[in-house]
Each structure stands twice: as C-alpha cells, then as structure tokens.
Image (tube, rainbow, N blue to C red):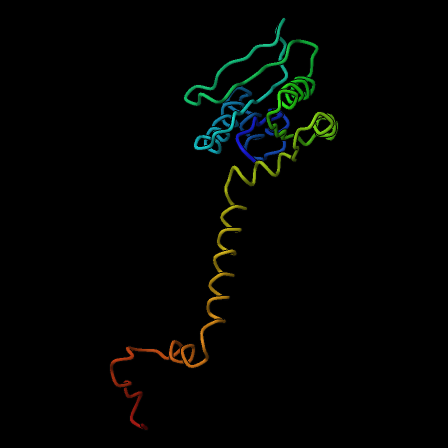
Length: 180
C-alpha cells in the first residue's frame, strides 16, 4: 500500500477517545487542536495526506491547511450537511481518481458507503492504537522475541548448558561456603 489519503471523522474520533472527549468538554476548539496534534504526530514522517472533517455551520464548506503539516487539511462542512457526507464524497473522489483512501470512523454507514466507493475503512479505535504506537511496539517486541527463541532452538544443547552457567567462563568457579 503506497501513499494514500486518510480521512478522519473528527468529532467521532474525539468523542470516542476519553482524553480528547475530556478536553472537548472544557473547550471545543482545544479538543479539535488536540486531535489534529495527535494526527500530525502520527503522520508527520509518512507520505500520506490527512484530511480531518468536522460538522460546520457556515454558509459554505471551508478548508484550512494544518499549520506545520503540509499534507494535512481540516474541512468544516456547510450548514445542513453532515461531515459524514463530506467524508464519503471526498473518499469517492480520491478512489475514483485511482488513488487509495482510508476512512476512520465508528459510524457504520460512513464505513459502508466509503467501502462501496473503494476506500479501506477502519474504526477510530484502530487509529488510536496506531496513534499511541502501543500496538506497533508490542508487535515489534513479540516478533523479536519469537526470532530470538527460534535462534536459541537452533543452538545445540552443549552451548545452551554452557550459557546457563554463571560467572566468567575463563575463571575457576568461586567457592560457595565452608562445606565445599
């Protein structure tokens, strides 16, 4: 999978992430800023485009670049149009042009409609795991441990027994007490 466009259902993500939901309860703008910062941190070193869509109440749809992240964009839908419709429409445009799109939303209808147009979809929880890096780090650690175990199984029994002995192999063993 090469570079693709990532669409995030903004308020859906915020309200399904306890820490962001708490920030949003205090200040809606701060909640949006915290979400955008998370996404910038996640996608800064990737070739992917990131589009976060929020419900808006302006006369027309507005689009703003994300400060400090040239491949990021924030879109507010126009009054009367849900962000869900904007996400599906934009994902259809991206897929129709032959590029890949990934849509993150817990809204089942958004995921089904986006898939119908050719987008890959996932729940917000999947993006959260990636955003914190926990799932990736665990996968990496377990893969490494599995590889070490396989290497260890290939080592003959004599070498394993020698490795289990404590102390410097070049020195005589230390006496352990008066009885020896």
